[in-house]
Amino acid sequence: AQTVTQSQPEMSVQEAETVTLSCTYDTSESDYYLFWYKQPPSRQMILVIRQEAYKQQNATENRFSVNFQKAAKSFSLKISDSQLGDAAMYFCAYRANFGNEKLTFGTGTRLTIIP
Amino acid sequence: EAQVTQNPRYLITVTGKKLTVTCSQNMNHEYMSWYRQDPGLGLRQIYYSMNVEVTDKGDVPEGYKVSRKEKRNFPLILESPSPNQTSLYFCASSLFGDSPLHFGNGTRLTVT
Image (cartoon, rainbow over all chains, first blue to last red; front, side, top):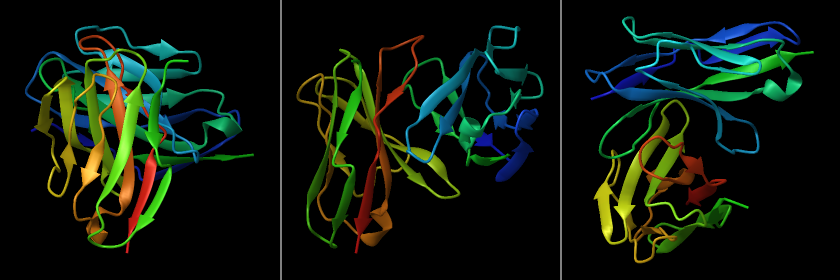
């Protein structure tokens, strides 16, 4: 079974600084997707960024980028120029590219932005 | 506006009193699913549906039922709720393949 591990329950960063959230996963599949979701206090689940495993290039969305290391099964999220609105719970998630489109989630990292 | 709508947003009930959480999507998605979110556990899949009349268990199906009579609706039924089903519930939908999962806004359920 696939598992996703987020080893940092809480992180904090000064406003305008850069922070990296860690995620590792375990799978025997070669074709899959990885995601980072943001959950602010409103409880919404907001897709931040997505990475296809077959793509070697790291995904980037504005201030958010990932470091995808397939061999190491590592998928970290870097947030540059942190803003107060980035404060949220961040979940890493895995999805195999077949069958049930189930997302397997990590336990989350709560990110605090210090003004 | 494309969205997944869940109702109610908050629900407090007592042990054993049947309840239904509704979920509806307006994007013509084939795939729908339910997750529960608990502290320290992340989100876990309860049930999913690949299309009308096609449903299957996820990782934590015990105590829940679902039905998919129409493509847009996927209600979650708790026939006899228990306190261990107190949780935050999310409905989600997507097209198959290379498309992201769209989440509803969540239902906070408390069973006393």
